[in-house]
Amino acid sequence: MLPDAIPLAELRRALVIKLRHHGDVLLASPVFTALKRAAPQCEIDALVYADTAPMLEGHPAIAAIHGIDRNWKRLGPLARAAAEWRVLSALRSRRYDLVVHLTEHRRGAWIARLTGARWAVAPKRPGQDRFWRGSFSHFYGQPANARRHMVERNLDALRRIGLQPAAADKPVHLVPGAGAEERVTKLLAPHGLAERRFVLLHMTSRWLFKCWPAVNVAALADALQARGLAVVVTAAPDAAEKALIAAVLPAVRTPVVDLSGLLSLKELAALTARACLFVGVDSAPMHIAAAMGTPTVAIFGPSGELEWGPWNVAHRVVASDAHPCRPCGIDGCGGGKISECLTTLPVARVLKACEELLAT
View 1 (tube, rainbow, N blue to C red):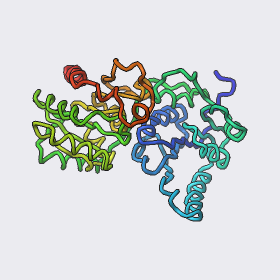
View 2 (cartoon, helix red, strand yellow; view 1 turned 90 degrees about the vertical axis):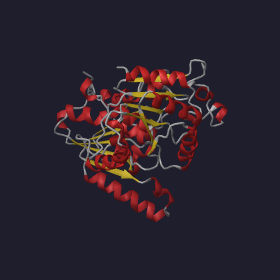
View 3 (cartoon, one colour; view 1 turned 180 degrees about the vertical axis):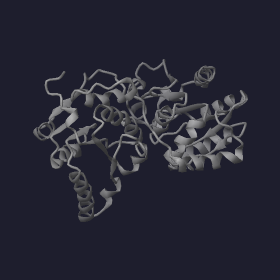
């Protein structure tokens, strides 16, 4: 038992902060599960960016979700201050006993102080200053060379305060909801797609240096359809992602079902749950597929699969073994937005991974 472990039985309310992107927020969902199991009497809230809230909505361990709108920075000083104050007032009214801060975002230090939480845990920051040190009662960290999955790194915050997560706490949790399920049913009906009889390809990312070339995506779609499987293609409504799909569609010999730009994240989750296989790059939809329990083929380039790979699901990671420089974490070779470890990754290797999972 840690000498400074917190008394979990005394927790009435806790706040978990994850101010990052959609996939990051989804990978934080086991923190809520583990904390609720260890302290069932505790009401647990989340603070996230407003656009990422769907990743946690419906989670049975979460009492309330508070959102910060990234667009506030476009407001005038007074309007932005008023919006920030409304959120802070809502947080203060909850009288948290514990704040769990899962990033190095400085806002978490302010919230830990201004909410008056008795305990607060955050990651160690390189060269952390007096303000950061004085904002938290506990700090968690790991060796700089540790390649550890982000789910485990998030759970390290709880380990630091004396809570040991169980295996049952660790699955990523996402609830599509009845509305999303109904919309997906309507979208699939005209195409006659039976559940578990189609492969879902989501080969785009907001970070284009993570993407596989369009010609390869088209070749993979053709190869899968030649094996008797229908193929559904999805993408976010982002202009760059839609441009990649626009290059794929004319290149396929057999038409695919194109749902790109038509789905919310909840609807994408509902669709993914009905696929027999998900194929995608390192992005939030890949983490959504894992959360829905759909076998996943994940294509990795500059990012690291040990930290960001599919979690707790049958999967195959396909990455170049001809580029010892990966994972480099750089936005394309030399920062040029094109990653040679992806452009040279052959279709045959991805297809082989698909066939292996489909055979299980």
